[in-house]
Length: 298
Image (cartoon, rainbow, N blue to C red):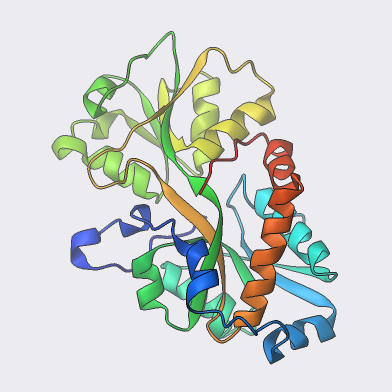
């Protein structure tokens, strides 16, 4: 199973999930949420049910992964925290990533899957991106809580001083199957690195291959690399996490947030406020640390 997919974008932004806006919080205060919308019908319905239904991806470690109904990760911890802040029980809706992000938003946010699964009240791990917003007017995408950043995870004694993709030449490399990072890596300079790349089922497994000495470096997210080190309980000193923006990807990553139905503005406001309370109390930071992750400002 692949990670959350890239979404449709204009031809000139083939990987525009990586070209994101971080200015969404201002919208909560200045435009699309009416100041008086504190108890509108959408929030009343959720509160009356006593349960907050939260959609999270399957097979998306370290955010949400694990067998069957035992899904764990940062997004699961956040879902619990949001439900608690709203004085609601949590109903977790893990789901398989579709071909496109637009499919996931349709199935889990505004319409529901044709097999009868969903929609949820809120979906987590949604790229906060202007093109995705424009293509999905049925949803509100808001409240970034983390930033995904692509890094080269490598042993410093075998590879150091990475300044460009050229420095990866003649090195064994790992990447995640179906990811934008793998595509960009294999297409770098007309395929210069293609024969050096080994593909793994997940980015975390690609990072584990570095720890096990199978490859010299892996092009994965910072979260995937940190999760692999945390699970293996290794000393981080011998390893480097070098941010490297190759052609086609933004240098500074992309923020991830939440999505609700476009008309559920009161619910969005309540969720934004709950997230802020978790930040203010230090609980959000504690969630990141619990899973061995660095909290990178969105």
